[in-house]
Image (cartoon, rainbow, N blue to C red; front, side, top):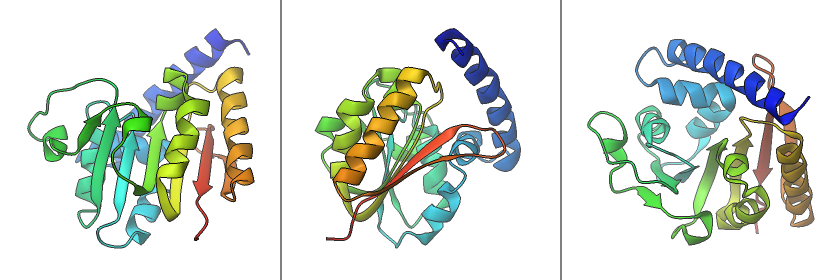
Length: 193
């Protein structure tokens, strides 16, 4: 499949996932529902984190999905990181107005217990640059979950290389294919020191 075909297939998949995400979220927060369909284990993982755990949405854009996570799990400290500035708006990313960092991954000023990213790393072309930095920023026992939205051969190759880097660094690292809307999910767990 060519990169163009991957892009068209991904766009069709994203439209289906967004519609399903709106149903899943019950209209309360379509973006969190969208994330939950790209990362099906996300709601369960959020519920298992202890109060005060730090979650980082890498490539958060407007911050809407991160705000949805904050509504879903209000006992967690949710942050976002994006390369573009989106002004806070009431009812969505306004909830995170002081918690969105506008910087590359290497400049994120805090460590976290969970990192999630939907499409940001492969779209920005920084899987092998930012991926290891994000893994390093995890607290011991922390989890990182990445779902490429445009799984081109180059993106999959980069994520597979990141899996190897994670494993060499002692991370439990897996790639799984989701069932409902088949796409890869890369999961990393940092060892307890």
